[in-house]
Length: 417
Image (cartoon, rainbow, N blue to C red; front, side, top):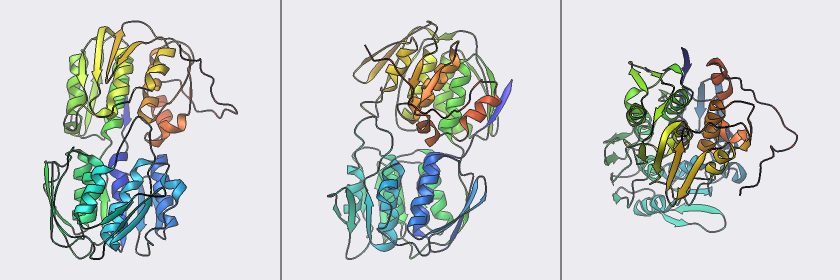
């Protein structure tokens, strides 16, 4: 039996880091994951005049007192999706914002229309020409009622950040319920905001004149934890996964139980024990508390081991299947039809040169590599490092033979048939 420690949540840390831009004062953030997106975010804030000090490997002090709005580095902003949280922070504090269009993983259209709808409802005039998103308002942020057409995590958090120091009451209806929405609300409240209802489909924000600094610990990363749970199932292992909130993992746990995996829950840990053979199953990705879309690729890799035909219905993103071609290079029997992927499991995989197509697709091929004999080379592994803190070291601690090497040329891959 092995054990592994889960790092802080990427999806919670990013909006909280950018929410620091609302605050004139020092915020000490604990349990920050050591990943690329976090490093880029701190560089963006420092380039805007913020002071960022690393107190230890997972703790940072952020002081945005002298932040200058509209000065974020265009090229850095394009490297990650979460940079759009600067819009809410700048608009909320300064009554105006200018940020380049965000980047991040490319797996289909990821519109920001709900963000724009929310900013306009708060009194902003939004311009999206020339590669930038600009918001202007003569009267700053004004409270209002906002109904989102779809439950958007990013839009919910962005509007919550903007409205925290706005005038009057803002009500977000059809709000996203994900744990990182709740974590951002808790951080803002610790800084003096007045936000209630986070974790439900209606959030109420009573604007306050200003926020103060605080100390705050980020929640554990449920997707990292889920990835280790699935990797354990895929390799017939037995692993205790520490620093987790088991309630956040309920949908992942339920779907592992369906395939025959045992999951024992503790206060802040889960112990996963997997049999040699897994049962086939089907799953549909849904907003929290449903099965997360960010666990779709990892589960697909695991189901290559399950006897019979399994399926995954991707209801969040219309094109999250680029990783499938990489699994097929390793011998996986997978078919994609629209938003549904079918996996004919029970056929052994074989080592092959592959690439990480995106963050979660990259961890999927890494899980597949752990399942097969021989040496697998994974190119573009920096995409995996966008969201997984010391993934090679943690897997080595569980017995994997894995190392990161510098290659002068990209890993060669076969042409898809």
